Image (cartoon, rainbow, N blue to C red; front, side, top):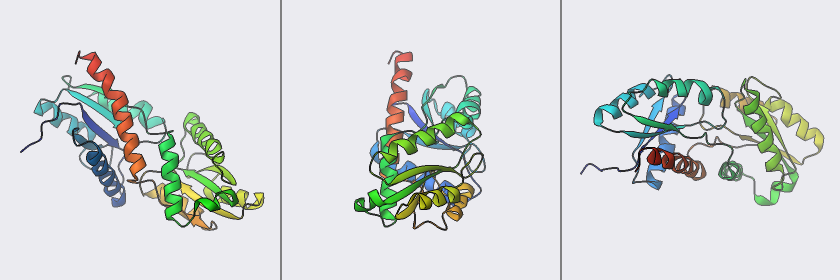
Length: 249
């Protein structure tokens, strides 16, 4: 039996990558979201490199008679993709679709929990926190607002008991991961861990990994961590209520 979904479709919009690990990770994350919300139809669209494309998914939904869509950028900060190219793609969607763009995933306390999960999976324990400095390593952006958010997250995370937390960026801004690792060493932290604040493997996460060569611990990307899936559900719920209110549902 084909399921009948009464709630708006959740369209997860990923950037896409030539690295096959990227799409595989996105699909794994979406499978976890579907398991959390079997009452919601969840689709994936990619901006580049991978299929299906966002325009293609939107056209298919419209052809099926779907009317309400929540478009959720699979992004950790509100930078260029969330501010410019995703809205442009959505504006070009078939006119019969009522689309609301959800907020990006970060910042969220759940993402901090996911970062700690990855660090513990990499070998740390809660007892190590006070003697461990952490590099919060993000992709980086040409948007200073997005980079400021990463710095603010690092300051917030420091207050949860780590020896110190420093932001780092794989592109577009400084410091680089290796610079932050060196700074934490000089600060006197007993050990240094690198926590990639990225969702999926790819070119920039690989650059972060190379920059972590002198660290004691390198965590995995956030990926399909259960906390990340819960953030997607939260963003969907926050966005779908205005969609329904707008159509009188």
